[in-house]
Each structure stands twice: as C-alpha cells, then as structure tokens.
Image: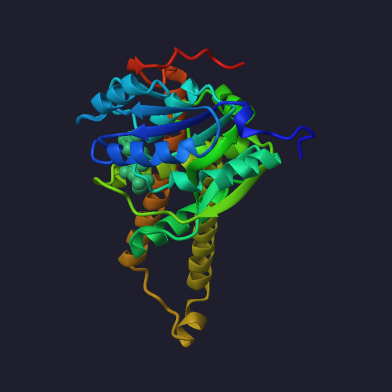
Length: 330
Ligand code: UDP
Ligand code: MG
C-alpha cells in the first residue's frame, strides 16, 4: 500500500450525483446526504447534475446552492442519459476523493465511511457490489446473466454485479477522464484504469421516492454499450458462426452425394430420404438468419466508429451553479 497514509480530512471529498426528474427524492437526498457528510469530518462538495429534467429538479438544485455553496449544480441542455450526466459531474469534481451516487438513495450515503476507510488504507477504487437486489426476479436474472456475459466477453476484468456506485481516488478519475469515447461506460473505464481496486459489499435499498428513470430501452442500450466498448469478441463470434455454418453445409453436400451414389444401400437402412423442399427452405432461412446476425454485429461496431469519428462534444451544458468550467486533464 501507499507509504503515506491517506487522510480524508486533509483533502476535499466530491460526491457526484446525476439527477433526472428527481424532484420527489431531492429533499430526502439533501437531508440524508447532508447528515452523512457532516459526519465525515472532511471538507466536501456535492455536484448534482441535472440531466435535462422536465420538473423542478434544477430549481431545487439552484436553491440548495444559494443556501449552501458546497452544494453545486450543472445543468445539461437536454436529457443526455445517465452515463453522460455522470461523466459531466466527474469532469467538474475537484476533490481528492470522489464518490458516485444515485439520486434515489438506493446507494445509501450512510455506508460511505466504510468506503472512505478502504481508500485511506491505500485502495484507489472501492467499488460497490450489491449484496441483495430489491428488484423483481426477471430483472435480477437479466442482470445476473448480463454481468456474466460481459465478464466472459470483455478483454479487461470488469467486476461482476458492480454498478457506478464507488469511491475513487483523484488519480483514477484523471485517468478515466483522459479517455475520449463518445459513449462512455464508466464502470468499465474505471476498471480499465487499473491502480488498486477492491470490492465492498452493501445492501442496495429500494428507491426512496419517485419512479425509476432508467427505462428498459436505456438499460438495454447501456448493456450493449458495455459489451461493445470493452470487447471485439462478438465480431469474432460472427466469424466462428460463419465457419460452423459452412462446415455444416459442406457436410450436407457430402452426405447428399454419398446418398446419391449408394442409393440402394441407403434404402436398405431406411435412409433413402427424398430430396425435400423443407430442407432447402430451412437451409436458406438458417443461412440468411446467420448472415443478418453477423451483419448486425458488424453494424454495431461500424456505428460506434461513426459516432467517434463525428467527434461531437459529449454534452452541452446550459447552466452552472457554483462550479467552475473544468480544465481538461492531462
Ligand atoms: N438518471 C439520469 N438520466 C437518465 C436516467 C437516469 O441522470 O436519463 C439518473 C437518475 O436520476 C438516478 C440514476 O440515474 O439518479 C439511476 O436511475 P434510476 O434510479 O431510475 O435507475 P436504476 O439504476 O435504479 O434502475
Ligand atoms: Mg435507482
């Protein structure tokens, strides 16, 4: 571990929280997080990113900032999605230690001291692993399968069942912010950065108020992004598919030939199959399906190349409350 002991009180703690239409939960969040933060015995800043909310979320953030300047806000010009909102918040964080939370109190701020303690021991990323999920069995099964598929496919070790909730050291954040990807998958980039990482379990609570903001579509998108950003194995899968299908087809041709030549012998064993339409149709459909799947996989990657080549800014900020424009790391 580090030769110099780390002390929370010596630096600044930044907490980054993306918020999308969270007016119902914000008063609860403000109260609980403030109580928790006062117990840390360290200077802190809370950066709330309004991801294009349509309700009073921004007004509440601004009001909070005017009464306590340690609570800061960044407002995105529209809904850019959770990962980009989080990214923007991270860009504005000034702390020596950075914590990432959800607005809905599913990641209870009261558990953070355990995470800070690990950081003080010398770990650079203390990521949270959910002990129990408070979601339905279908969603749970989907998450379970997804994280295992991602781990199998990805070329770096992305921890299982770990979301964005974490505490990280400044140097990890700086490394993450150096990456220039149009579609950041932050929990993956955090693992990619390296340094000393450790998992710490916690009990994920139920959403404190309001509705879930991650629609199924957004969730599937996030899942796809994770795989595409961290693996090219699906492309190779397409190649394997191709080989497998070609080999089957070749075997089929061989079988037909042999069957034609030794027709009488085959007939004796009841294997004189008449050349059927069904076989042809199945083969054509199967091949067509495989080709489309492979094209689709290819398309996902080409699309990602296109996104990155366009090089648009990740996000547009419409307002700031109490934060400086960030300087790019490097
Ligand atoms: N969120 C966001 N932009 C979005 C969707 C969600 O900033 O487009 C935020 C939301 O306000 C919350 C966090 O992302 O703080 C997690 O969303 P939610 O709790 O709805 O989803 P869960 O992860 O619990 O399924
Ligand atoms: Mg939630």
